[in-house]
Image (tube, rainbow, N blue to C red; front, side, top):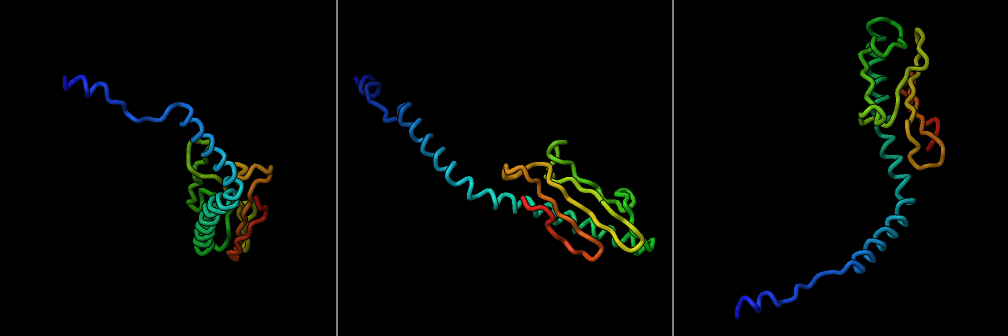
Length: 138
């Protein structure tokens, strides 16, 4: 008799309609919040470019102190270009030294993805004076 009363107890649970309504509400809230968060996401990803360009600047300066000139070769300054997300890595930017002479250099970080979907790719540059600037804003 006791086993029969245990089996006849109803367990309180959510039905499929209640779960679907909850998921729809969460989806709507995410869609409302996402446009407000996109500039923050873009800014956070640009920190990667800034840090890598500062590191590239330091390696170029070391090379300059040793050879009295700057170089356009990444291998010469022992700067290991990080693998991008397209190459199964974690980097969101591609890096290149676009100009190097005896007394000047300029390096560029270009986003490999459009972070906010507006068709503009973020670009940062640094020069021999350690002037770090955002050339193209995403």
